Length: 529
Image 1: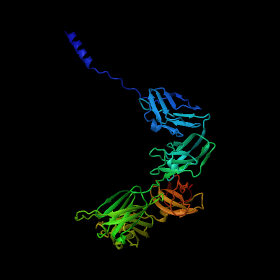
Image 2: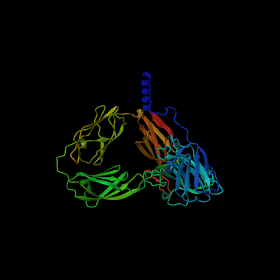
Image 3: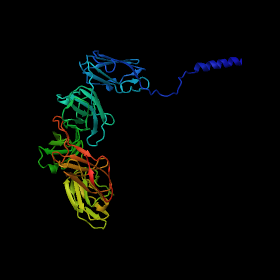
Image 4: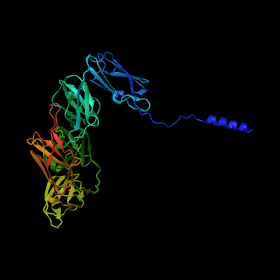
């Protein structure tokens, strides 16, 4: 009886058990290996339209359309089929005669289970009796930072191809993480080289949000060439436009398609503009403020915009202000923005740059006080730039500390908001507590612009125009960098290149290592090249 009971319980347990695959073991990290290909690598006189690659394991080629680079562009679509461990490509049309093709599969073929991509998978064939073997290599860097630029498309075009931006390159390759590239299996010929960040992957330079670099002269490729470093820079020369306009009771905002650095505005039906309207440019936004209630219902504005590439656009926009229910506005504190923060070390030559978010209609600047550590009151030079910008300059006699005091209620904006008290106390460094940087570039004849920046090159601290040598004095101890612009046309600004005219941007060089400035420190032999 006990034996029968035990057998029944055992059968029930077995019927409920699940079969589970064994666990554990290491993941397969071995990429698929090419066993054979049709045609074989470096085949000549290839006349077929079909390529077949066989691997040592099951493969996945679902991303081959985005990963496979074929140079030169065959100009014909292809169909991809995967069966077990074989990948087949079949082109709709025959390949061009007497042409060497390179098929670079990059990460387009992976093993089926762990998705490890096949390494260095490339196939070179010729439809003629010769394999082109020339190579063009180089490095691409950012023009401003001098850092290597990743994923830049470097393309070669027949020298008689115009315009370049509307056509795909004949040969192309992308830079690696070191900014390096190598165009291989090239035919001896004359080419034009264009480098760009192909963000939409259409193999065309579309300007907007894409970096650009090029050689102004054609390359006569008769042997292998190692190019000097090529530099790319933001080159959005597309026309600016109005994306959106927002009307409020006292403000009208125009959202622009791209950032502008300068905006000049005139009004067709309003003569006394400064009394009734004010405008302010903030990156991609152009803001208009209604200073008086008697502004016409609609004002026709003509806007002249200029961006960092000196592209100028003229836009027209009707400015109007939304009618809202009349209600008493709550008074708010008017913020005062300053380029100098409390506690920041300064030299004896000081410039406070004050900025207001909205136009100020009342200023009582005579009440601003500037004291030194000896409690001596010094006179300051106040410059009203416009109704949103004020500069306060002083050459102080302070030995240790200064104090700038802006009393409350001396500034009022057009909405009735007034400022709170602002006190800036700053330690003062004397000449023997600061440093000096003097230097030159190899070219001592061309006009140039030297810019003193922070270590990350994100903030401009000072600039000067020079020809032979630059000199920055009274530098507060810290770490800096210097950028030099070769101002070829001597206009005081950096001028970009022009692809249509094949003119290069003005040359920019920077210090390669951080400049550590100490107290009572003079460095007069700095060379930047």
